[in-house]
Length: 106
Image (tube, rainbow, N blue to C red):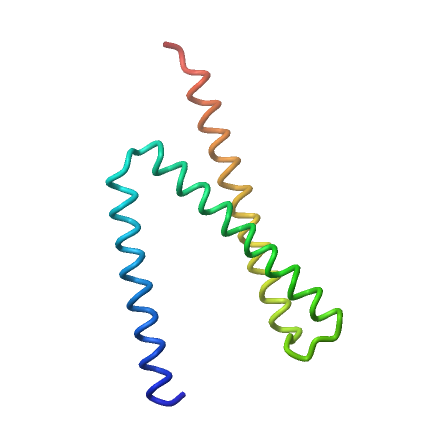
């Protein structure tokens, strides 16, 4: 990589870090219920986006597109699979916590 590409990558990482810091302070300052719901919704949208990307990459590769390599298809597929598995595990943990709270005697 040349120095301009490294500089560009560094600037992008810096801007992403600043956006993440701004998003985390914004979500903390909002109410805890709406912040959690917003984070959950964002995570579900991200999982959906990863699955759609993997599907479109797979379809493009199967159609014979020269712009898509097999390694890209497999990497995107694995990212989507891991994200989905993580989503299922989070759901399972939330359900377990909900059941525990509901079974508590008042």
